[in-house]
Length: 83
Image (cartoon, rainbow, N blue to C red):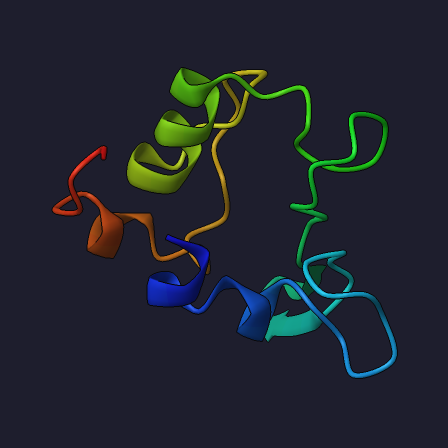
């Protein structure tokens, strides 16, 4: 999925590690920064279950049930199969 969805484009900076987040995106509300989606359990999403990951990527809902900012193109991923 990471390759198909090109996650590295938004979840990486030129200076940082792949998928470690920190890329600023300017919005009408100010800058938002992409999150760390590495498998690290402390700083990334290593503590996510498949359902947590699926809810975030397909429905825009974080593990804590808060909404992701719509810069995350989750509506586009809803048609991707779970496999």
